Image: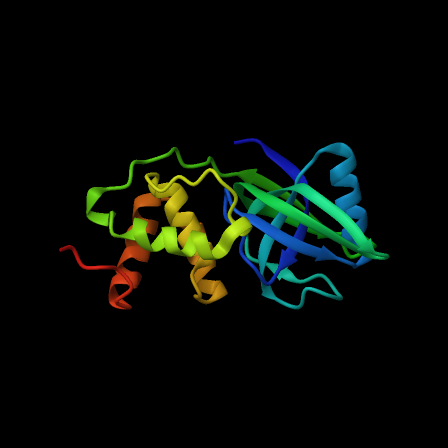
Length: 198
């Protein structure tokens, strides 16, 4: 499997493939990174922080992250860049190094995106609840919505549910999309959030 080098943006958040995330960028190392990505139409990697902080010296990231592509951006306040990124594809960090600016560069291997899988009928009770969540989320989850796709539905539940960041990370790392959505279904069922069949 071929590898490539990308800049990393370790954060206290988890980005899923197909997801959207607004970010406020103000540290110079990330301003420069975002500017270069915009100029060259390239991506950077978002990883959940394993130890350390978002600001200051380089944090240690989890080894599985997601490629992020910048869509909308603006700078309404001098020195603060507002960007909205789109999650493209998961990756695994093979090696990483820090530049003098504090920006981390990583050699990564991409993890193939999961092909769409029709939602099993046994999990169909997850669709009405997601419709409610999406209506509440508004523009945070742009259309189109693929409620019949177990991959898309599992990723959206994982990113939108009020669960711990480590739980989100573990769900993102699962390579079996049916296992991911079945795990989420079990959680929702235990919490009594799914309507019972009439």
